[in-house]
Length: 81
Image 1 (tube, rainbow, N blue to C red):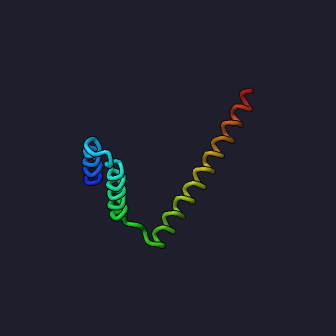
Image 2: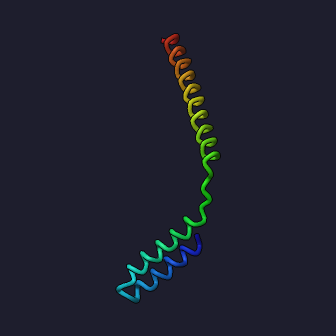
Image 3: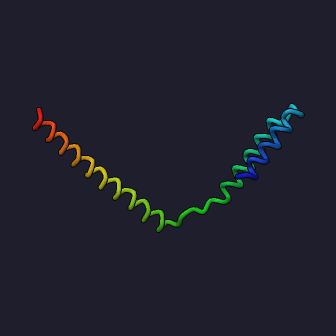
């Protein structure tokens, strides 16, 4: 990340001196972006499936809990009113 920022800073300094520098700044930014993407470790198919399943299950459970809390609150308000 610091390397990409250094490239952008250098490109910005060059832009002040050279009118063609905005193109160089864009190239430098994309170089930094490409370097950051190269550092990403993508999960394998099995890990992705397991983690996605956990997210879906937790979302459904929380949805059910929120729906139950909503029903209890509505019933409580119905008794009060």
